[in-house]
Image (cartoon, rainbow, N blue to C red):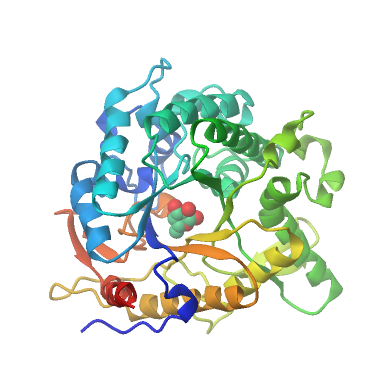
Length: 446
Ligand code: FCB
């Protein structure tokens, strides 16, 4: 028997789309049908991915996509959020890979046939390797290349898309990929992160212009990730450290988009760490968006650290954590939404990712994941509380439909509400999927 979810009335209307999210590199496989991406290259570096795996096959979604979208529909979801693989659409020579494009057109038609709304992310970290060879996101030209690719897909997808996201989590692309080096392309250096971030944001701005031209009726915006930072103590130094962490990791991405400027810390950065901002860049980056996508998983505590200004602490012993070691703390999602609402003149907000990794096991054909069921219920209700307090939230997506390639963790972490047996590619809905199905089916009848 499926567990019964108790979800606040505010999310209980058919007008509030509830969906599931995935991304191209994490599920598609089908490596032979596209150019290499920076993640293919990164996966070959010894030690870069914990289990030494790669995305060559992943969930083989490229051949099983019909079954996968059937699953999305049969579980009762309203919407499916997925990303387009840039290296599947644009060849190294610059011409269009028609087969690659046709795959997404078929997928979009498949969603329409099943009555599912299509939420399309245009960049979820899989930069074509041929562009990385020209400097990747450290090269301003990559933003123009992105706009050209967006021009191609938004023309080909005409009439099939409900919502576009230009980028998913530029923080991860820039900071994890070009500063810490724990994600592709694995570059390390403080002088890189904010330069890459600026070119990513510029790519967002340029892509928005293209979308306004080619898809004027489609809801378009950007997806950012947020980790709310809490001071580890009441000391002034820790409070300052928490604010710094927020400015560097959260506000650095949202302020240019919503307010047209970088946080004040820009002025105190050493010259070599500053982005190269040209005249007109920030106006382009801050052109109006139709919605802000918010991805939320966890919060962190921060303490002062003289060398790096701030130290992000692991969760204290005894705190509930996910299999990623991330603290489970739903109230931070409510508070984050309220803070954004206070700090900015917010457009409508979509929760574009929320979910958790569990140590799931398939036993007698079933996967019991009660902690995930509770997590989803509590976080959806935290969203409802923010709505009650005046934040305009217009959609909610669970990460993820399927267990998949979790970046530097490889296949070791399972975020899906559907279990994937990687040997057989069999999909088994977990108890969380069945609980959601029961709720969503009942919701449709109200
Ligand atoms: C987010 C990513 C997504 C997935 C989840 C767990 O940062 O957007 O691809 O890896 O984390």
